[in-house]
Image (cartoon, rainbow, N blue to C red):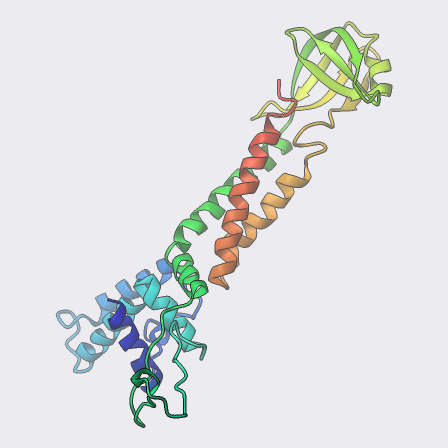
Length: 283
């Protein structure tokens, strides 16, 4: 299989290359789904059993040839590199011009095909990325859906409930105050908010609709209200925003195999971080 790919690469270099994307009526950044859809449409249109025109059979063969190359991730990756006049996935060993006793250093005759070299480590990684790109795109789309759920959870009207304050204590640093609520729950607020809320026997808590993230505390008698900062929608709001931006880039930016693959890894890490932040101050 490896020798076949090397042979095809050299044929590609010395023979005029067909533009398989043009044959299928696609742009060079077409996705695997777009390639498959275009192939089915054209194969149905030019199949010799359905199309009796003289040129239908020749066109049908070119369509099959184009699809066989673009459907295989490794062949497609090599084809894309060579189509952009980049160096293919093999390097030609430089032949030493001076004479040497060792036959391995003997100059090759003119017109002989150069000896191929094994793909570099980076080229192997890029080929792996190209073959697994569809899974990376799935990850980016799933994290984008998760970001949309977070936006919806934050945007919907908050759910209101009442709790009783049973005590309180200052934090270790002394800048914040922890209110102890019934049920063994605690919530951190500023010292100013604590002075206003600790007088009330009962307060109202506003939580998000889906994940029950505490958003605000309110004294119904004085109508004093304060936000709960230590939550994913408070101090950690940067992380959901970052996940949204990277998920959009991984889903809708179609240029560069390496970029989209790496963005998917970043999206997976940010997704796990956001799951952790969802549990902060959740009660």
